[in-house]
Each structure stands twice: as C-alpha cells, then as structure tokens.
Image (tube, rainbow, N blue to C red; front, side, top):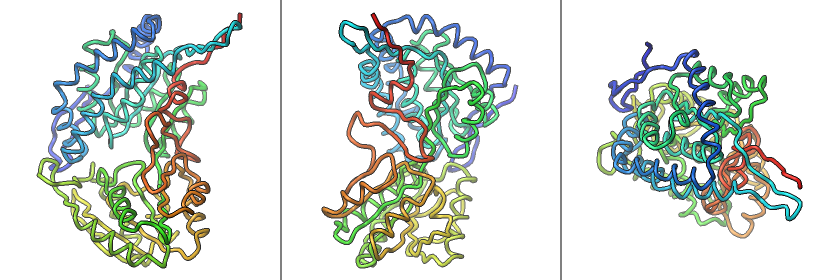
Length: 445
C-alpha cells in the first residue's frame, strides 16, 4: 500500500501519512457512494439538515486539533488557522439551513412546481490554502442536495481533511461522504469515474485538465480557478485606507489566497505618497513559525511554492523593477514582506498568480490605462477600486466576477462567490449557487 506523507511547512518534518487511493479503489468508493445515495436522497431537506447539523457538532471538541493541523500542513499562523477551523465548525448549521431554503420546491401556482433534485455522486476536489473552508463550501450544498460525495483533498493537507471527514462520518450514513487521497492521478481517476459532477477549487491549469476529462461524460462542473486580482488607486482615494488594504490583501495567508491583491495600479500623482504608506504598513508584518506569538506571515506551504515566488521576484528585478522592501533571495521556508514598484506587463508578477506576500505596484497617468491593464488578463475573479465618486464608474468597467469599491471583494452574506473569464466555470454560494449542485425538475399538472 502506497502512502502519502504530510510534512510540516516550517520544519519539513514528516507529521503523518495516509494511504493513497488507487484507481481500483476509486471505483469501489464510487460504487459505495451510489449504493448510499438513494436512501440519503429519499430523506427530506429538513432531515438532511438535521443530520448535517449533528455531524458538525462532532467537530466542536476538535477545533484546536484541526487548527494545529492546518498550521502544520500548510504553514498558516495559528490565529488564522483558528479562525478557519472555528468558522467552518460554526457555519455548518447555518450553511445547511441556507442551502435547504434554496433547494425548497418553488410553486408555479396551480400549474405545478420547480423542484431541485439530487444529481447522484459528486466529486469535491479542494485546495490546500484553505483546506477546511474551501472543502466545506462545496461539501454542504452537495450533501444537502441529496448527493453522496467523494472528497479528494490536496495532497499537501491530507491529515486535516481526514480528521474533518472522520468526525462528520460519526453521524452521516455510511457511504454518503468518503475521502480519496493522492495527487493528480487520483484526481484524474475520480473525474473519469462514474460520477455526475465535479466541484473544484484550484489552479487554472488543473481546471482545464478536469474539464477535458469530464467532457466524455458531460459531467456538470463548478470550478473556481484562481485569480490575478488587480487594484486601482485613483488620485482622490483615501491613501491610508488604500495602502492598508493593499498590504493586508496581498499578505493575507502569506499571499496564498485566490482573491489576494496581485497587481496595484496607482495614479502617478499620488504614487510616491502611496508607496511610502505601503512600505510603512508592510514593515509591521512579522514572519515566523506558525506557533510564535505575533506572527502574521507563516512559511509558504512547500518548497515548490517558495521557489515559484522567488522566480517571479527575480524575473521582476531583471526587467527593471525596484524593491522598496525585501529582496529576491529568501531562504526556505519564508518570503519576507516584499514591496516592488515599476511593475510592467512583461513581468511574471503581472502575468501570473503569485501566491506570496508581495505588493507589486505600477503607476498610471490616465485612468483608461489602468482599467485596460487591470482587465488585460485571462483571470477575472476579483478586482478592487479605491477612489471618490468616480470609483463606481471605474468598477463598472472591471472584468471580474466580484468587484470591491473601497473595500475587499466577496459581497454581503448570501452573495455568490463567482469568477469571470477563466477564473470561474459555474459558481457557488447564494441560492443560485447552491442550486448548481441539484438537477432542476419542472412538474406540470
């Protein structure tokens, strides 16, 4: 039996392992999922909601354990890991109720109704940067819709996913929620298996592979495929607020966040003052191991990710970027707070998702230039505009699924989490998003 070993993001010491799920075992999991699904689907929405609520109660005594596993497996500082673990646990009952409301039948008067029926077996493929929260966002609507689910977590965070699923399965019926471990080969086998839907959060390249392999079975897809989020800072923006946001967004989760600010376009008339504020705020951040006090930037998740950020920084320097803070030769496992200016379209920092604690800044003279550069990307997950009254007109021109005006993206509670262009295929969150995990059926009478 092959094993998948999990490593501490700081020390790189082995902290545990799980059995890799072979292609033959994937078929067995899918068969078990199909066997369990009809009885689960036969339950009412209220019954499924009650069972899921009870299942999430099993996680309460595990909150600290789950937070520690998140920190160790992907490097997130313990405060943020605690927020993720606690938020996932506390949201379970509310989220299940929200989905139940979205999936309730809709009356067509005396002529019939619209129903939201189960699809069957759903594969959920989740990322390492938010190993509980991102899995949870896809698991709950899939399960509440009456589907059985096979979770394939990232190979970087198998232990926290295992603990999560094992706790839920103390209450859930056998076979309704199962887990498959491994790398992209395990994911490929799962996508090609006899399932009806794939819900995926991860890279654009992986999403393209999933789409290709799902095509033969015309499997339903909901995919969030990352971003390269721009921020525009207009001349009349609140510079202090804009600088604070640019740093906080770029550095959140050590920059390993799909909606992290990746490219900042600032009006040249205020650029120097803005950059001085950015450097001042960025200098306040502290890197270190996940369990040290006051650390707010932990180690990057793995050496491969660390090297990718270094290559982008070195590319930027070679093409003329100036480093206002930091450098391009950090030793493993940290990337210190880094601020770069002189960003150009030829640089990898502009063209690619960075996934590291880097603020990359470019200046503009005309707002149309900034809008064009902000939109000149295959990605379109989020975008942010800081400015006065004209910020609304600029926001209307941003090619992104989520746009924040003088704030971050994501919208109020109940808003969908949605990307435009190649950042998204389908979406989740909101009543409309929850319904993507169900088959719409119209009953006429």
